[in-house]
Length: 213
Image 1: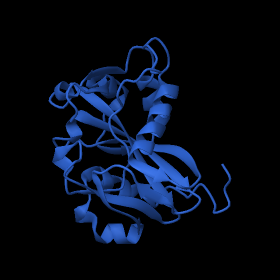
Image 2: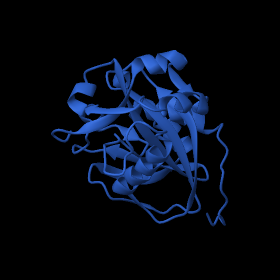
Image 3: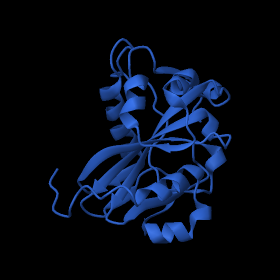
Image 4: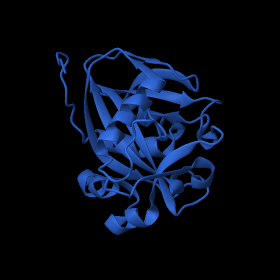
């Protein structure tokens, strides 16, 4: 955790007003239309947010998929979230921090959020492939200490070829693994990845080998 780091949060009461859930929800627009309106998202010191379940830190969780394989890695000792060190993950992304081009919270935050997601992925991996993107679910797991203060936004990036290299040092053992292999190694996965793995079979591949977008 960086000293003085500030992270994007929403109040838990906003989440509950839309409808709190455990696990995954496919009602993406219903939640994001409420989260991204004026004055709902805010930044607060991460050391406070990690200890205050009255707030949910909004975390993009990007799954890089090629056919029936997804990028998987193990969180190394330099991982920002120490409680997840040593766990295997299929999600790329992390906390959203304030930057110069973030809007004042008098306008819809959606465009700024998507720009932040692109930057988060670029900070962690080198992507030598084209992709199509879709937000497929919201993810909440209040059964764990980490999950109680975080809320995931699950993105799938369908790649036109399996060309991903790590950039972030905290990532180890980065590789494409099939869904069948991941299911066999389910106990190695962090809880968010387990929930996403159960869901992936129902999300059709959105891009062919010849995609040009």
